[in-house]
Length: 385
Image (tube, rainbow, N blue to C red):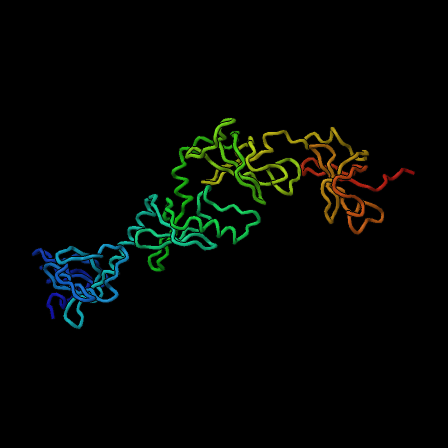
């Protein structure tokens, strides 16, 4: 047995006398299990590689321990310098048992952690797609890019959230390379999570800095979903080709910000390709929130100047619901005639009273400007006795 390997360390954990002597004479420090050591390839056999550790002894890497996630030990030749992790100080052949796999794992994942800490933008190649996101390759390590971490331009916007259509859109990225930032690294679980959105935010930081809440922007409707519409801005001049470059941003107009009126479907208010003027409400990283209605005065602020409780009005039914009728009194003000106010006794179904497009007489029974509500009734107004 090698006496240097057998020499114990001091009881207090400090180096042994022999270890200190060897180190002072220029020999390599005696390694411990788990240490990464530096050596030179002195022999390559079938399913094994021998490594000389200068001033110490020869080690061997064999079997599955030859696999290296970092790719640093592929295509080795005698004389090549290598790093390996110590698995055992002495095996059955009196040699150090070494591992390229463990060393490569430490190096690969250590590099990933450094990239995460530094916030480095790195290219990743898309291997596969599933309903949750994209399986990506970075070097020799595979990672995951969740759907929520795609950039605004690549995020799959599908009406109704159809999972199959979302998957089809995600599959279109397979084979492509995306710029991403590493946001989570766990070597023990071999978990790597990356974000294209975070990389996009960095590259667009200077562009984003030009805009602030309250700014008005001119843009084009690029997508419509059940929850709102997306607007790309700035819009090109009238008649110019709508080319997209790094100076363009995209924001969401939530359904509640499309109009001062009740909106059931965004497609009732805007169409793809429409030119619109919007106000920036907030910017949160890559998320930009816009409003169409805030650039117009709230018509409900002066509703009491147009209508009063008890007034007889004529309106057009614009929607029939099980609980009542939505009625347009003018282009700005809509009211609700609840089913309980459609007759005495009330009908079992509002469609017994009216259909969409029909004009009818109503009585205004309540006005709430703050909540944008105006109550209507089909019942005859009570005549004072």
